Image (cartoon, rainbow, N blue to C red):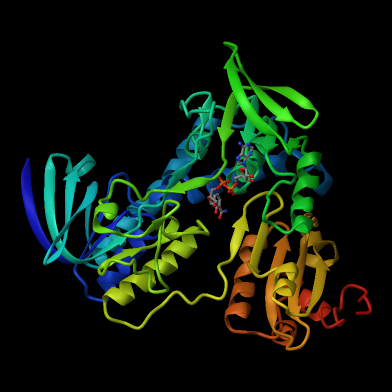
Length: 477
Ligand code: NAD
């Protein structure tokens, strides 16, 4: 195998929303960078996660709307799903974005190679050895660099008795690539992934059952918001078994049966497919980090606010560098790492990392909950505004949900904002900006919001926290 030798300022390992953003930003800052990716540019998010799931969720919503459109005067007979075509369309969406990543890296002067990278040690500079694969198979590179950015992401956790077999038992990647809509789908885990994918297939017509070990769906989410999602799922006929553990499964030829341990004894569920979505684990092994003495805690690489590990020159970003495992957190950390490498004064100082769960209705949060604020010794006022009172939501025929704003009772500062309702993911950006800028409830409430739009609910909730909402009866505080 021919070995090429390179000398760069930074090697980025992984080309997900962390790694490729680091490559682009390093290029912008005139640093000679090489991004190494063993699979495809874009990582899990663009190829088999955020983007394809949103393409399919959007398609499933359209199908569901058409089937239930008679109340608003749409009579569509014989609406069907062509799963093969839906999958091909999804692939074109992914292709556009991943192709764009390659173009952006190139445009910013960042080198990109397909291969497996391993940090082999120090000899003056850090050394990274890359064994080419895919388009670069048969080529190996020895790279000398002053910085390495580890952006290797995470992988799904397996549970005993449910090894992924790519057929009956699948992870989220498998579930987003089904060639047909499964007749019966059992989802293990009611977190982000389980809840998004169950919503998708329930809308496409699968009979879905979900098994969650904890007492509620979407653990970690304000129960008041999760309850709205639970109600809608019940209406859609989705079975939810909480406080239960999937023990084992057996192949019955034409189907599988899943044995679930519940408080009332074992329950059997029939399934064509079983999705296991019980969390993700960081990919920190096999990179040579242990030999260099990089501090790793429960699989996560330990970093400071400048994304630096305890070993000079080695940085980590994204899922591998700690919770929350969210693409947009990885991208911001990537900018910080690139800027620090380029000698700028940058650090991860976000007041909030917003989170969106693309269920029906959507859930979006930014900042802290009322309980968290009280736990930090702050007195809070809460303002709430229901979508049922909002002109645009009524016109959209989609009124489940509300906006809740958490305000410091003494300073009036907006501490947190929670939204459950369709469109939540698109309106949470305003909340994140308000929190980042230290906005007061009046800053949000007195900003003129265009009518008729969903963000008016944020304005009204901010006014409600002062007892001054216009389109609901204010409660005396
Ligand atoms: P998660 O941690 O969100 O949820 C896993 C769920 O599985 C938990 O509710 C847990 O109690 C349950 N569980 C664990 N073991 C179980 C068992 N044996 N039986 C039944 N239930 C069990 O994990 P996830 O849904 O796999 O998602 C992984 C990561 O991906 C998350 O950290 C999330 O941040 C990220 N993600 C984000 C988005 C988004 O931003 N919209 C979408 C998908 C995934």
